[in-house]
Amino acid sequence: MNSPIKYFGGKGTMFKNIISEFPIEGSYDTYIEPFGGSFSIGLKKEETEIEIYNDMEQNVYSLYKVLSDKDLFDKFKHKCDLSYYSEQLRKEFKEKLKCDTLNIVDRAYYFFYVNRTSRNGIGGLNLSTTIRRKMSKSTSDFLSAIDRLPELHHRLSKVIILNRDGTSLINKHNRDNVFIYCDPPYEQSTRTSTRYKVDMDNDGHKDFIKTVINSNAKILISGYDCELYDTLLDNGFTKVQFDVRTVDGKGRPKTKVETLWKNY
Image: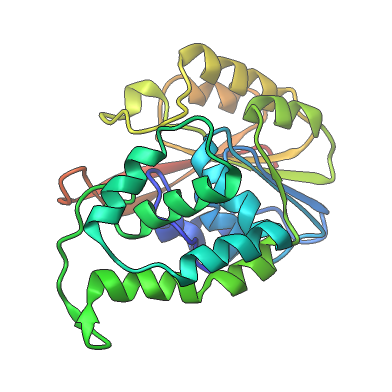
């Protein structure tokens, strides 16, 4: 199952490489993503008895919380069913997302609308006019995303959705029957973009590394290779790397090397 959103740093295009490095099935009964983002890996893998999605960013948390809760989902789906593709609406909803007092359903709806009608998922103009189903590709993609919502609701209704500090969540679930897939914001020295809404500074990365080193859980971490994270190799972790085809902020193709660190 694909993620309902486009998300900066999402791992949807590399899910096979990542899932192939998961621990053997039966060695854990709890799966956690403390930096959930688009939840692209969690939605692609086989279901686990207990699953926890967590993210500190309010917009994406609101969307996944609404998708997981029946009463909230019904209200959200009703809004989506009345929607139509409009660049003007996208601009209005993008402005409304700046309001701190939005209720969770409205926030989820505005975020979903802006994300699915934008070229890059963060509000950029979508000028695509490829015809599908006798309509523009932008409109078709948006309506297709709405069509998939009931399926996503069914899947996410089994997932615990949280909004708290990711490193603290890892610390709380310090057990060997837990598998934690971590996709924290890329370490500062490895990137040129600052598009994370909830970022992690150098001290945050150090605290995260200290926490995973001391954890009894099975842990897999995604990131770009860097000296700071290679301290994990002296503390029971091994490293796997693979090439990833991606695009830069201007849509130009490029190849980067994704690194995985694991302690099992």
